Amino acid sequence: MEEREYFLYRHINPIKNEVFYIGIGTANLSGKTLKKKYARAFLKSKRSKFWQRTVSKYGYEIEIIFKSKSRDEIENKEKEFINIYGRSIYGGTLTNLTAPLHT
Image: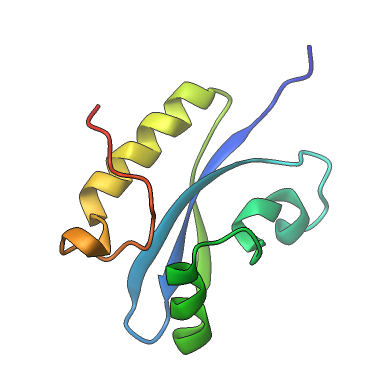
């Protein structure tokens, strides 16, 4: 069975120095560059209109913040970080559309 590496990333508004998105992806272990290895973090398509508006207004920076061989561990970390930052519709900073789930 092929071994996988999962990662947690955040998108940061460089003007406000504020995290506005938390996401997870599966690393391409043969990727030679950060952009190829962590392609999901760099992908601009398949994002919400709220994410698109933020990026068009402010741009964004990407930070890979956690890596693991365990999908469950990455999903738990994603929930943890969504709970930390909070969704913007509830007074937080995130454009994530999924509600934070308590771990």
